[in-house]
Length: 125
Image (cartoon, rainbow, N blue to C red; front, side):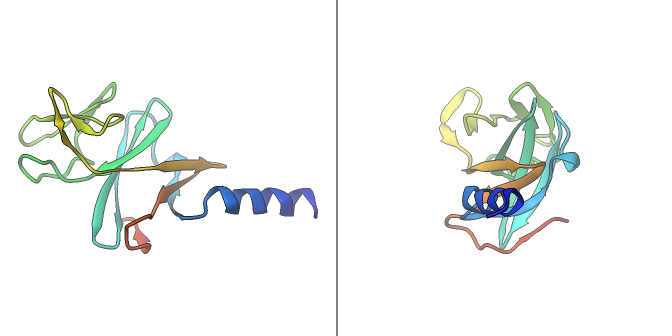
């Protein structure tokens, strides 16, 4: 097997059960991006080069989180002010209130999200 084919096979194995949802170029550090996988809306957030995926709707007011301000690992809802620790997946100060999280992998600049339990059709607005 050629080096190129071997690299492609490794990349495919590393992203099995994952769906490509964009590229790292679309999500610079400190930014968030809304994606939809079937009926599920998620926010991809780049925390200093580490990409995480959380549910895109605020648990308190239902506003979108992908347009919210990120400071460190905290994403602040622009409507109600609730803060989410995006790396731990919960409301800051209320760790019992967890927000949906999904595994993200980055492979050669491409973003892949786990589709376990989700409709596997992905789209970007």
